[in-house]
Image: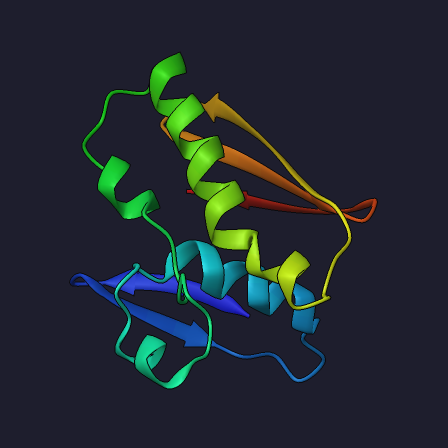
Length: 113
């Protein structure tokens, strides 16, 4: 899956052999909490994250701490639904972006926001 933004609109291009776990992580991280599809789900927390609320925050250790908490929150459903037994994340400032490593049951996925 390739995620891109143009004029404030997200565009997702699905690849033929897409890994469903990676797709689920991307949708959980990049969808804003409050997605209308949450009304159709049985999950209390819904789909998406609050990461977008950090967009204008300075890249500081405090912001990285908030980001890590938001990651744990938005990916927690994977444990509840049996997709994973253990989820961990690491965040770091990389130039003008933020690097995110998501570790699920020993498998690592890397994203930049």
